[in-house]
Image (cartoon, rainbow, N blue to C red; front, side, top):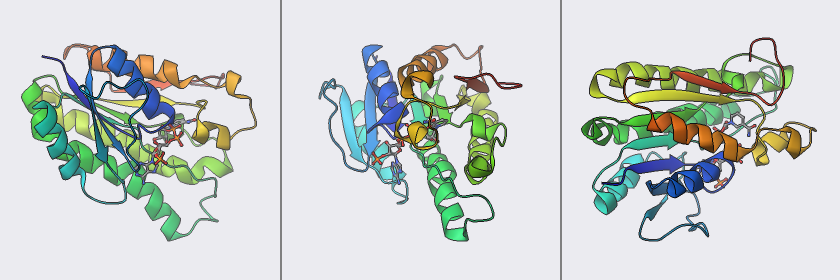
Length: 229
Ligand SMILES: NC(=O)c1ccc[n+]([C@@H]2O[C@H](COP(=O)([O-])OP(=O)(O)OC[C@H]3O[C@@H](n4cnc5c(N)ncnc54)[C@H](OP(=O)(O)O)[C@@H]3O)[C@@H](O)[C@H]2O)c1
């Protein structure tokens, strides 16, 4: 039976690259998007589209639609995310709430909605797109985003603990700068010097293919040299 993955943020950037990669590797997909549009490569028989706005707590409807369509869910990839360049001092509560709503609370709800299916799979997989900004605070303009991404990384760690005895394995994937709309909006470096989203997709495909006995809690990727990453 072909495995089924739910991917948020699949309209562009890292989520879109992961979706294309997993499709090529034989996964059936349910893609959550604010404006659902079938990617050109997608076979309608094997790709389900769901309307999904991370601001609206309707993850259960998405999961129900995927379950009806495919009868199983083996992986959840939470890639939808937003960034902010305001410092912790400039930001107001509303901006902080937005970062937490999209980067932390929505992925938790999605994982929770799919939890029984992931457990039923016996080898459920969860990937949360964290960030190197969830591992260190690099600059004044990344601090606010970092706070949310530390929480994303902790979310993946918490899911790993909650699901381990159920055969669920969770990984926080933590890239530095990736050549997507988001990555290019926070740096002047040219795209070719940033990590290619297709390489993040290769890594995610590898991670969710590992057996239960090869759990990877965190996976860091960088396009440049830093002291520890
Ligand atoms: N790019 C980087 O340098 C980098 C580095 C480390 C970690 N990350 C993380 O990787 C993940 C993907 O980033 P990316 O570079 O692919 O970003 P991106 O190119 O800006 O794409 C963001 C994705 O998130 C979706 N999204 C944003 N707000 C949403 C909402 N309210 N509801 C549903 N979907 C929403 C977008 O959908 P729409 O098309 O509808 O806007 C889009 O699919 C994020 O969690 C990000 O924090 C990125």
